[in-house]
Length: 67
Image 1: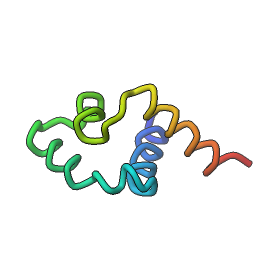
Image 2: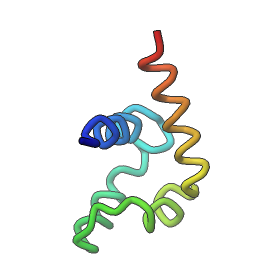
Image 3: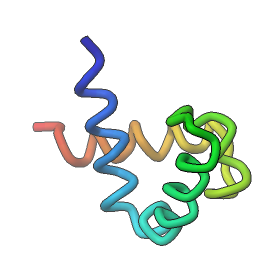
């Protein structure tokens, strides 16, 4: 029941310049850890925290999907 959240997170990772530029290291880290948990990867991969990522994601969703 949270597919929309997962898909919008993937979309921001693909479309937001700062996140897209770090996708290769993200995929490498996911493969190495065997986990898709983004939490522990935000700081080392994207140099951000949950609060900042959530703000970016919320802004992205509002600008992309708001009428």
